[in-house]
Length: 260
Image (tube, rainbow, N blue to C red):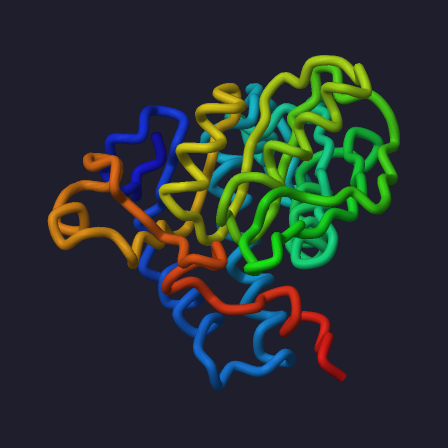
């Protein structure tokens, strides 16, 4: 368990970080006056920190002895201690569109500590499917670029907005139905999530470990809001159109200036 976590009743595979820096970044990111040019560096800081938490607490480690530049002056110029296991293989599922930048940030961050030959970035283009009332009823798959097996790899899912859980669950169903093997671990990295997301992912894919920077349950009852997260079944973070409240509001559209 990470040192800065909110206590909750969702179970040991859910990690809700209690990080004031992350929460401050998210507050700025969701502010109505934050522009596209301001949003992208905010998202970078958020995902560097979020994937860093997953790296620290979930990834395999080994003991290593590595020379430093002080070696030229003393035989004691070595770092000796734990590092991330360089043999670890990682597949990042990039969920177009809002997940593109988070996935690329994760890829860049991982490439600083793991060899590039052990990293892969897959692209999956999916969109919400809604009914005549605008309610989300599923996902449509419009394009997949999956590079190969996931056997014994850590599969990362940096979908930034954990709303209904449908996209994450559909992504895993795609990988499993393609018979690409069994991953060593599956880690979801929504920067904001809802109780509905956590319940759905745990129900449909209990193997998933989730790290999230903020749990949004703004439509819950006063009793639920006063209790630790996960205590009451009526916790709610989605409106009638299944958008997160308080949320961030149209992240994919703002990232891409889609209205221009």
